[in-house]
Image (cartoon, rainbow, N blue to C red):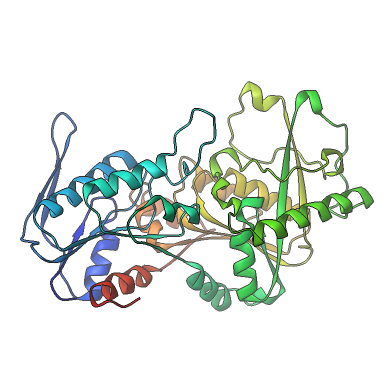
Length: 393
C-alpha cells in the first residue's frame, strides 16, 4: 500500500492495530480528546496530502461520540488534501433504523450516510449490514462484506455432524440470510414464525404435546412456506425488519388459530402493560428433530429473541443448538442470559466485533461464559483495505 495512511478511532483500537500489522503500515498519529464541555477534538499528526486515507471506526454502545469522532476525522483529512478517504465501519451505526417504523419516525441510517458524505468520505467498507438495501443510502461506493465464508469454515471445522443440521431463521426477515448459508453448507433450513395477538383477539388454543403438526397447522405452515419462498425471491427482501430489540414482529400474516401456541419464552424481559395484553403464538416451519440447529442472524443486541428461539427449538427436539451472529453487541445482561440458557450449546460471534465488545465487558466475564466462542474475520477487512489503492477487489 503505497502513499496510504491508516488512522484508528477510539471504538476499535485492537482491530486497527491488527490491520496495520497485517499490511505492514504503522498507525498514523492522531490526537483524539474530549474537552470539558464534552466536545470531541481531533488533530491529524502527519501530512496526508495526495494520500489514500483509511479511518477505522466501528459502531458501539457509545455510538454518538464515536460517530462524531469519525466525522471530524474525515473532515480533518479532507481539509488536509487527502486524495481519497475510506471509512472502515465493521458495524454500521444506527443500522437498526433503516426504515420508518412509525408514521412520524426518522430513517436514521440514511441520515448517517448523508453526514458521512457531507464530511467528505469517498468510500465506505462495512460488514453484514442489517439491511443490504442500506447501500443505496450513499452516493459513494459501499462495500458490504460478508462473514458467511468464515462462518461456514468454522462450522465445517468445529461441528462434526453439521451435515445432519438445519439453519434456522428466527423471523421471516432473515430468510435470505439462512437460505444462502444453508445452500452453501448443503443442508436444510427452517423458519420460526411468531404471531402477536392482542387481548381482544385471543384464541383459547392449547399448547400441543409436541411440535408435530395437525391438519390445520400443516395448512398454516404451507402458507408460511409460500411466503418464505416469496421473500427469498424478491429483490426487495424484508431483511430490513430484523429488529432484535422488539423480538422481530413479523408481517407474514396467516390464520392465528392455526399456529402452535407457546408462552413467551424471553427471559429477563421487562413487560409493559401492552405486553401483558399480548399473546405470542410460535410456529416452526421445517423439521429439527434430532438435528443440529444453527440460529443465524446479523447481530445480537439483546439476546431475548435468540433465547426464545433456542428454547422453542429445544421443545421441538433439536439435538443441539448453536446461535451465530456477526455483530456481538451483547447489551445489558445478554451474556448472563446466554450463559443461563441451557438450550444454547455455543454462541458464535466474529472477533471483528467481539474485540469491541471486550471494551464493554471485562475479559474475565466473557471467558467465563462457556457458550461464547470468538472467531477471527479480521483478514476480510485487511485484504479489502490493502487492495483498494491498487485497484483490486
